[in-house]
Length: 80
View: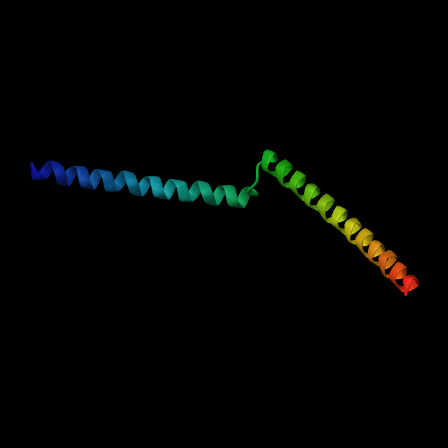
């Protein structure tokens, strides 16, 4: 009976080692190949475009707030 357990442990260790080596090789190939799939690249491009649009929108909003601040300060100066 102990022989069966030893064989199972050795066989399981070999299978585990082969799985680790195989997955490491696959990951290395994916990294060297470029990493992102076409779908991932499209998603990344879409995300970058959305962030740029948000930045432009916030820049325009900042300009508007500054213009409003100027208008309010000018009115306060005229009232005094």
